[in-house]
Amino acid sequence: MSTTSDQPVTGGTHVFPRGLQLPAAVSANGATVTTADGRRILNGSGGAIANSVGHGRREVADAIAAQAVSVDYVHATQFTTTALEDYASALVAHVPIDDARVFPVSGGSEANETALKLARTYHLARGEDRHVIAARAGAYHGNTRGVLDASDRAQLRAGYEPWIGHTVRVPSANRYRDHRSGVELAAETERILQEVGIHKVAAFIAEPIGGATLAGAQPPDDYWPAIQRLCNANGIVLILDEVMTGFGRTGRWFAADHWGLRPDIITAGKSASSGYWPLGLCLSSGVIADAVGGAGNFAHGFTWSHHPMGAAAAHEVLRILERESLIERAERSGARVAARLNAGLDQHPAVGDIRGLGLLRAVEFVADRTGRTPFDRAERVTERIVEAAFERGLTVYPSTSCVDGSVGDAVLLGPPFSSTDGELEAMVDILIDAISATLR
Image (tube, rainbow, N blue to C red; front, side):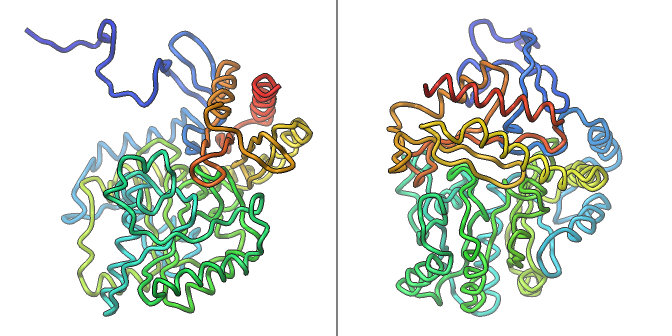
């Protein structure tokens, strides 16, 4: 007798969930998700700041279906595919890396794992035994064991401390909470790396602006040029984690473009496939790829890396971004969102900072604006605002560690770039109402 059923299990579920009492999504179109009970929710968070072209794009679904019929899957050690080769050729035109090469994987954590291992292998191929990874305070680079070590988010690291602790921590770059110049922050970074032996440092990894942990925290304008000079002068591989900020989220193809940076490696994901396929990308310079490939010693990969259907989905997303000028639209829409947030919240006594670029916008909450004092985490300020927004028909993305990786409350807006002006206005209005109701 069969023990399977298409019906949900009475009194429970066989799914290991990531939340309690989650509503079931039954359809999604544009910027709206519809639940089984008929509620229409504006996707102000874009999932996990991932949806770029909107839900329900028939052309992306058709591209995936066509690829499934053509070549659904082959292993990357045995074959390449036209889908992958065509996507890589189209993509590198937008990547601020010299002679870029594309290593596709299944998500942002895998992309950052790949980048760190690639940096180490690059130095070994050149006869240098560099092994130290430098990452910033309050960093977040993923949830697998290697990049969890590079991350500095207390809630996610808790319990795994015996497995991690090898990363050298350097200062964050948050101009709301640290008034040092970028040059001063870079000098402090250099001092720390000199203490551990700068000749041992394989890579410096950081998000161009803060993502999930620091909620859109921005560096001083002179920070990134100074960090690039530091890395170049000392042979350190510069890795920009653009998993959240890449593919137009900040109003540029990559956030690196805001400062004219040419990093050695960029990691990406999220908006690259707009959520239509699990995809991450490690984009390296030709110098690094050739050094590693020539030595033939980059023993790395995954079963699903270089997947042709992922390439087909991402290539169609890329075409939509280009054809509909959605990255330029994200810049314009983001400016309007920022203006509306400032108009509605600038005088709120619990709003400490409103920040971001493009359609990555954040609001940080404080118990005292003068001292920029965070709320006690026991007050669950972020969680309460997220819940209040959802009750009103809006998803926003939570950050419960935006001060230092351990405490601090903020929410982020990261909707699809294709969201209409009316949808964006509604999102901001709902968020303002949820904040006002929660923090009277």
